[in-house]
Image 1 (spheres, helix red, strand yellow):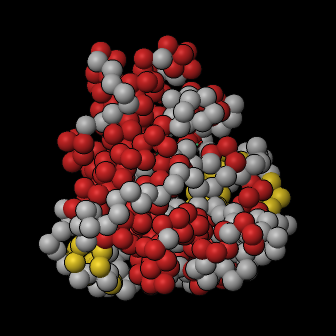
Image 2: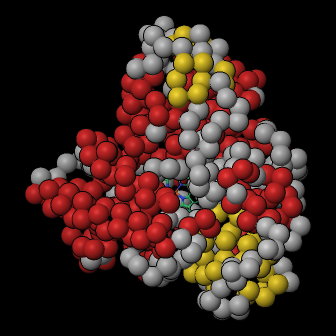
Length: 414
Ligand code: HEM
C-alpha cells in the first residue's frame, strides 16, 4: 500500500488537534495532485488569485443555494438576499441586532451561575449562533432538535473526508431535502403572517419571486440556517481555547474590550473554522507551474494559506497586534486572512459571525473568574474541513453576575 500523502494525513483524525505542521509540509509543494485526481492548493497567493478566477466553479450540480452557483446567477441571488440583510441599501440588520446578541450571550452565561465546570461547546458556543440565526431568519428555536439532526448529516457530507463516501453523500442529500421541505412550510406561514425577520422581509418583497423560484428560496433559506451552524460555534470555541492558552490576551480583553476586534481577526487567521473549500476547474489552469486540467476537483486549503510565511511574518505566532493598522507599513496585506475566503463567495454571514464572536469572547472574559482548560487538547469533531473541538471542558472559580460588572461596557460596532 502506498504511504499516506500529506493531504491524507491531514484527514486522519489523529492529526485533528494540530494539523499545522502538516500544512507546513503541504506548502512545500504548492499544488499537489492526489491519487484520486483531485488537486490541493495550499499557498496564500495562489488561493487569493484563484477565488477571483472565473475558470474555477463552485457548482456541484444539485440546487444547494447560492454558495454553489457561479456568476452571474450567483450575484443576482446574493444581491436579492442582501437587500434585506446589510449595507449598502438598508441600515445594517446585524448592527441593529447587537443589543439582542448581547442579551442572548448574557442569558446563556447567567445559566452557568452557580457552576464551576462547563462544556463551553454544549453550554454556550452551540446555543448562541443557533439562537441568533433563528431570530434573524424567523425560525422557531423549538424546532432546533429537528434541524440539528439535518445539520449534522449535512456536515458529514462536506469536505475531503466525504469524497467517495456514498452513505455520507446520501445522508446529506436526504437532510437537504428535509430542510427544504421544512422551509417550504415555514415560508408559507411567514407569507400569511409576516414578522420583522429576514425570511418575512424576503417573502413579502415582490422582487424576490422575480429572481428566485420557490425551490431556490427554500434552498437559500436552508443555506443561511445551516451555514452559521458549525462555523460560528467553532470560531467561538477555537477562540476560547486559544485565549485560555494565551491568558495575557484574555486578560487584555477583560480590561480593554475593544481589543476583541483584532483578536477575532487573528483567530480567523490562526485557528479558523473552515480549513478547506471545494472547487472545479472549468478549463486547464496553470497554478504555480502545475497545469490543473479542466474538470479536476480542487481543494483550497484556507487554513494553510492563512499561515503561509510568504504572506505573514511568524505565521505560527498568535498575535492580534498584527491587525493593528499602524503596523501595516511593514506589509499592508498582513491583516488579511482566508477565514471568510474572498472574491464573490466571501462569507455572507461574516458581519453576524464577527459580532457574535466579539460579544461572546468579551463576555466570557469578563464574567468567568479564573477560567482554565480541563483538557488540552480537547476532543475534536471528526470533520477536517469544518474543524473545531466537540467539547471544551473548562473550570472556573465562579461566574460573576452581570449586575456586578459594568453592563454599559459594550463592544463598539465595527
Ligand atoms: C465564523 C463563522 C463563519 C466562517 C468562518 C465562515 C466561513 C465561510 C467561508 C470560508 C465561505 C466560503 C465558502 C465557499 O465559497 O466555498 C463562506 C460562505 C458563506 N457563508 Fe460563512 N462563515 C461563517 C459564518 C456564517 C454565518 C453565521 C452565516 C449565515 C448567516 C454564513 C453564511 C454564508 C453564506 C450564505 C456563504 C456563501 C456566500 C456566497 O457563496 O456568496 N456564514 N463562509
